[in-house]
Length: 572
Image 1 (tube, rainbow, N blue to C red):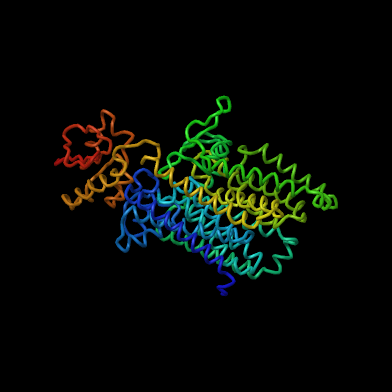
Image 2 (tube, helix red, strand yellow):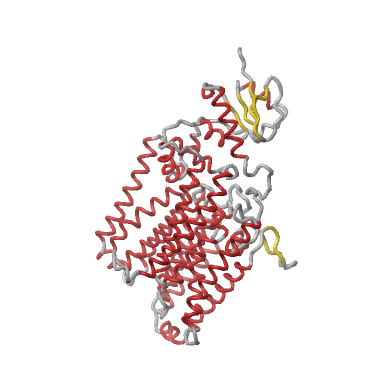
């Protein structure tokens, strides 16, 4: 490697790594204290990690969930680092690699400064910042997806042997979070974007087969692990439920609403309130000309303005006189017809048929328009298209999916960051003849990043600690430690606790802390006959989180903060 030649890249990546690592450490300082108490799903992954580490915690129903992060976490559990902080740290490392991967992806088209800025913009979106150190799977899945797309594009530009990495990474992404499988259509689409797809496949068939073979080998390893541990392949049933229809049951934080993510878009890219603890969705009321719930920050409006200008310039460039002349000579009737028919079909059938068919339909429509436009004189239109297609596939899927959760928009954020940088590049290209244009191209992106970092820091410092339901509990920072203290007391005073029946308000938490299966009772523990239920099921210990009044003959053995341990042992 010629270090002199890559000096600017080395400086950019080093600076990026230092800044992103510093952000990660600051967020870890918060969340390692708070724990994962307020992000309940993480306890599923923690209990699965215990299982992979050799502990039988029960919790069989959740073992089929995405296994990659629990498996990595289990390695550290085997070393003795059994704590919720472990999975928080493991998932946060992917944040750093996501930033580096995004830089390299952008460098395929842009210079070092724009690529650095784009990576920083992605890394500081509120929706990303909120989930960096929560122990969830979204950041790792986004990270692996970015690297998958990067190596896929690289394989078509540099050497098809990069497919040896791209295909296995796609499978790793799938097992990091099952919806990361949406990178696979993007990988396959890349094969159809070359001038002669069939000839290209014939010329590179060996590398393609080896790449797919390595991907199949990774898949076989994971399926073998499922088989070895006798774990149900949850992703098959989950995939069937998702792909069948979007109009079955409603869950999550919103009803079926195809405009949900569009309405909240500005909040995802910039918001003042709640960061870095959580993100509150909002909605703009046109009649009152105001936001309710969460609302965007000044940085959100700046980024949106840049993208609007960029879109206008892109369309103007696409349909300039030279490109209109090129399009005039194209055999466009058939391509236009395919595009219009399949686009109409997509909108007419969307949420009425399987999402798999919807993705196929929109893919055909987009491929037709690409084939019509790819000869136009646009700077690297293929790259623009593949990024847009990546966004469209994810947006179509998650808009279709009946559960609307804000973090589900995260797979679409790499395109948003990309489009901001593309827009800046188009703007700079427009002003390249003015005085000091080169300085403007350097100063503006860095100034934008500095503004975003400054605003994010100020907003974060100005927000009080709160939970994901945006409630500021008095025991926000101690709730997790209170649970651990009660469990440690029980282990110390009853070494035989594992052979007794234990119930709890928060079964997932206690299953992890006590390394045994404990059912959750928070929905029923305040009912008047709950004590009778405990006795009927010979429950020796009940761990209450919500100051439950458990009746006699149960007695309160120990309390730490809001967590209480009740005891009764039937001698009969």
